[in-house]
Amino acid sequence: VGVAALMAAFNVFRRAATPHIAELGQLSGDDFADVERHPAARRTRGVLIVRFAGPLFFATATALGDRIRQLAAGREPLRAVILDAYSVVDLDLTATEAIRQIERELGKAGTTLIVARPTGALRDRMRTYGVGHLAPAPGQRQTLEEVVEAAGAMAAAAEKITPHQTRKVVRRPRTDGGRNPPAGPLTSEARPP
View 1 (cartoon, rainbow, N blue to C red):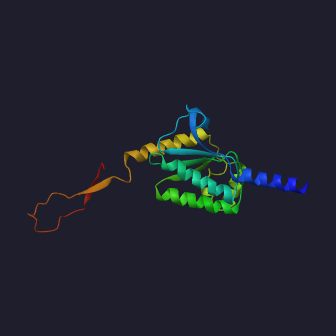
View 2 (view 1 turned 180 degrees about the horizontal axis):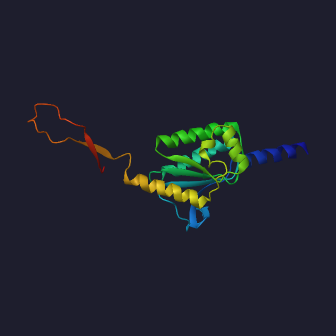
View 3 (view 1 turned 90 degrees about the horizontal axis):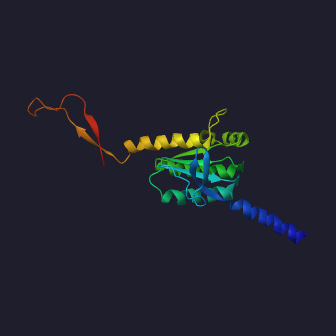
């Protein structure tokens, strides 16, 4: 009996430590599905949607970070990574450091991490552990579709002027034959890459 209980406990921990982390795509409206299981699910340009189900603790948060890096590596430049946290059942302090690391890494690439649809209890823990800024404000309820639409609009706007565009300096015409420094401020124009 003791060995069976020990093996059952190990099996529960093993399953908790290896959660299914799916990339989601939109089927229609607020209906999202795993893109590997549903080929008709559409990705949103510039946005990666990830669903995590289970408790977030040191082992699962590391797996989440690895999965986000793996999915992001094969995509166009991302402006937002949305973590659908509706099925996150718990969060501990060790996981919040991993989440901060994910946020920092994404931020260096110009990508925003957004936690969508957290339960009230999860949102409270996020605030307690210092990552509440990633979740919607208290009292604000958004569907996953609304979060994805907002992130998609942000990505589309960012495509119009990207960080990779250069600036060329345009000087006002000189009227003094080049003897004195130009008067007035410099102006700049955006130039496509």
